[in-house]
Amino acid sequence: MAAVFLICACVVFTLKYVISGANLPLVFDYMESVNQISFYLNFYLPFCISAVCLFGLLFSKDNITQGFCLIVGLITVVVAGYVINDLFTIKLCMYSAWVLITIAAFKPPWNYGITAIVVLFITFFLVFPGFWGNVREDWNFFTPGIGELIVLLLYLAAPAAAFSSIRYLSEKYINSEATVVHLNTVGTKLLLFNHRLQEYARIFGNEAVKKDRLRFTSDLHDSCGYVFTNIIAVSNAAMSFSHMEPEKAHDTFLLIRDQAQQGLHRTREILHTIRELENPVKQSIETIFEMKAIFEEVTGIRVDIESGNMKHNYDPVVNMVLTRIVQEAFTNSIRHGQASRILIHFWELGESLCMVVTDNGIGATQISKGIGLAGMEERLAALGGTLEAYSPEDGGFCLKVIIPLMNTIQPAPDTEKQEIKFKSEDY
Image 1 (cartoon, one colour):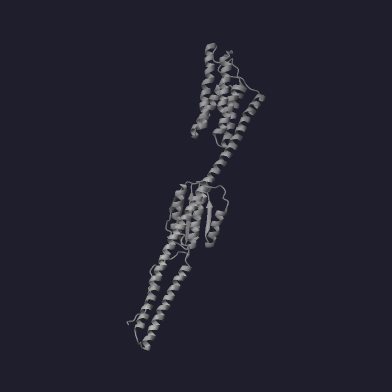
Image 2 (cartoon, rainbow, N blue to C red):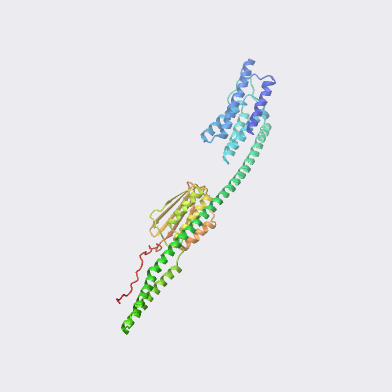
């Protein structure tokens, strides 16, 4: 649209002053030939410079370049219309182009203020056309009246208001489209992320169940099998005697009973262990690192974990809370923050564990506690922990979690097998 206005201004000037052969006002010199060339150069040269600055202002990304184009372009557009009186044709088209470009080149609300400065600059030189001096003493500049200035300002305000509305609606539409695309992309990635986590839990769980099955089988074989073998051996030995003294028989039956009791005791221990067996997919720092690897692979977002001086494992409830909070932080960073990098920092301070999750996303000016943050607070409240969510001054989003540990560190399990001692006698 700005290009159309500039073309119209150039065409109108050419038709009126060049092609039609109209008598030009003697502005620069008494000689008509010299005056004609100077008159044309006075319009075309600054007009071209102004047009270049106009589109340089629109397409440049550097603030210094935009400022240079704005200042040079405004000066040249005033010079281009300095000695012509065509207010509502040539000048109006050039000024309208500048109003549209300043509306489009700068972001709201700066574009409104800069456009107002452009209009004031143009109006000043219309009201005071001789500010830069008169080229001839007998030349009188055209000065518009109050009514003409009001009409001119209304003409400039109309395309400015229309273009501002179009820009606002188009940005809303583009943002809504971008939001839909982003949510669809995020939904797909989160679905794949959750699917991969479930696959990891299933595979890891199957492996853990298989290991437990082998361990229980080995325990039954090593303890109960050994007991029953001894009972059979003692029974066979006792049966081999055709006659056994009462005292010897009594001792033999006591030995069989003791070994049977020990076998029963060990069998009950194994059954209790199986009954109280926890979820094979243990939540620990290893789970968080596995989640990190899956999340990076699925989303392409870089995740850095600094484990600091934290323990390898804590109480199962603490492990579960840490894992759930990290998973929720991953979800929020990609869904709301549109982050490209996430940093997780762990540190034990005194009797508390501190976890800080930060990202480089868009952050939030006002934080509303949805289901995710509310769920985090509920889990932490059960442990006496606290949650702090905020956007740092340098951007992004930050979650700070503090969990009191006290006696929550899980001791390492005793992997040494308990040996069952049996009485033995020679027969």
